[in-house]
Amino acid sequence: VSPQWLLDLWERGRGLHPIDQGLLAASAAFPDDSESVADWPMGRRNRALAQLHAAVFGPVLHGWTACRDCQEQLEFRLDGRALAEGAAAAPDDRIAIGTRRYRLPTSRDLAAVAEEADADAAVSRLLARCLVGSDEPADEANVDAIGDQMAAADPLAEIQLRFECPNCGGAYDEPLDLAAFLWAELEASARSTLADVHRLARAYGWSEAEILALSPARRAAYLELVAG
Ligand SMILES: [Zn+2]
Image (cartoon, rainbow, N blue to C red; front, side):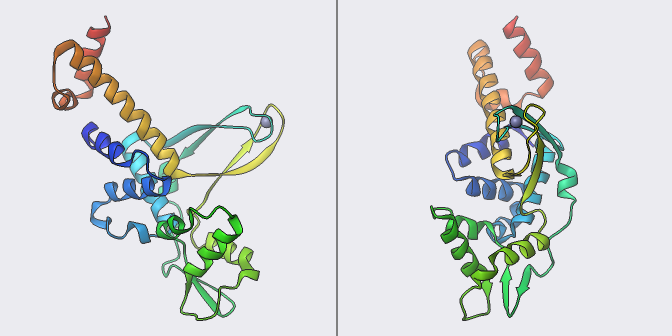
């Protein structure tokens, strides 16, 4: 992955909703599938993002969160490559509850309900979108069972992190938004590259393209000279 490619991706995704940033990153990583990534079940999208993360930043997902109870900073480390190689979604992307069948939610579905402020209303609209081959309304009384079956059919759709706080003893699970996580790393990497370009351009008068074409070793060596 070239620094130019990362900068272009960051520039195109700035200010987008995390769902759209995730789609952009998955399409950039898998350009042959770019037409269909919005219709991938979320687990497949997450697998693509984990693969992209491994290719660009290495396999370890390393981050921090504030303890839900006492705000202590809690660290997490996750093997993104193991995640990417984990269980695949059910091949037919369908689950059945009673007489009704549902497809697994996709980025397109989540984007369609993302603006819904009321969580129950968002779930209702999501169920209605995912219901297939039925004129009856979605079976909202079974929403928990539907959610459980969807999670079982597409285990990577939601990644749960387990936190145990050494400060207050609290223990809880929290979902990891892989798109937001990856984007935060892209953002930091792009900012750092731009800062390098800024320093070298100012010192030597080189163009952005010339600086980005330097190997990492040469770029680091010139930065050291400039700092010295
Ligand atoms: Zn705590």
